[in-house]
Image 1 (cartoon, one colour):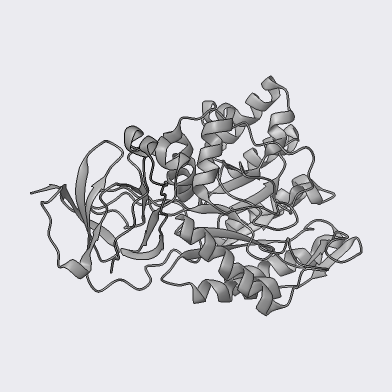
Image 2 (cartoon, one colour):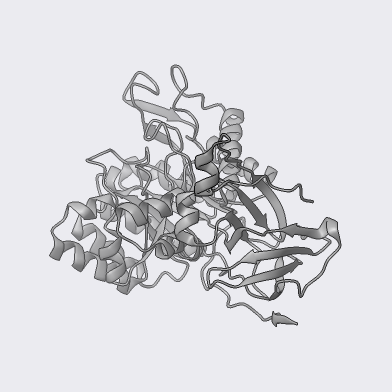
Length: 438
């Protein structure tokens, strides 16, 4: 008999914007057989209607062969989510001359980047998109002024979102540069228009505005007016600004996220602790970027946010990828398991806590429903070859990604050694070939 029966999962009180609707549902159920869970059990999991229908002991659930995926040797986990991507600037590092900003090029890059992240396991992506004029670099334009795409980049990423429907959930964050004073009037108007177009999150970069506190206040006020989450780019090295953001965020029920906040690591311990306590009291999430910086902020000595200090203060810490092969990080992978690995190897988190930052915490920060491998919860799952989280973060080669109850991506890796006496004596491990599935 199954170990668990369908139940109503808890609902998240926060809005994730566009991209979190029910969408198309698979017509047939899918059985995942012989999967290992983090508690050590080996189970069968039946999916249907985009949710987990039942979880039973191995061999207790049956399904026709075409509707069965053998997960023997795989660890089954809640799927990660990507809370801090940049689809409009992704995959531009190798461009000769200025990066192309034609809408069709932005749509192509945003689509390719989301599919790369989906292949790694992220079944939901929050993509920050620049609107209006932005400062450029010599690599981009040969001047100190970047391209002014108005709302064209946002429209292109929204088209990518529609084309990806059923494969991954893509949410857009509209990010203007200036919002205060007379110079920020255009940015304020563009931001309102972006929300009408379908942007799901109000974004901003207070560090780049002459009035950082005024910039943050404008973002949070618009988020409250439109019932949207807010997501602010900030280095986090100004305690007064963080305190002001925390004070303004307390009444915003749709959620406030800050990132990458590497500047918190440059503050004194006492100052950083007080700032973290204020953010925790206001319910603000910090999204760190273990893999590198993002192009939206100036690089001022790359550091990762002090995740252990933040967690000790009670701050929800999510982890994202940030730049993906652009001017800020030409070798970015967009792999949430790599972010979790870096949190465990460099920030001192337990492997399970590192994975929680890219899965449960990331989903909560994005306003997505909680995911568990239990009946009644959304079927957003990742199967990785291995038997423990520490192992899969170290050698996460073969993966099977499940979105809304169906397999949407597979990565199969084969490791083989030449025939030798050493191989036989040591019983060297192999990554087996994956059997073809439905």
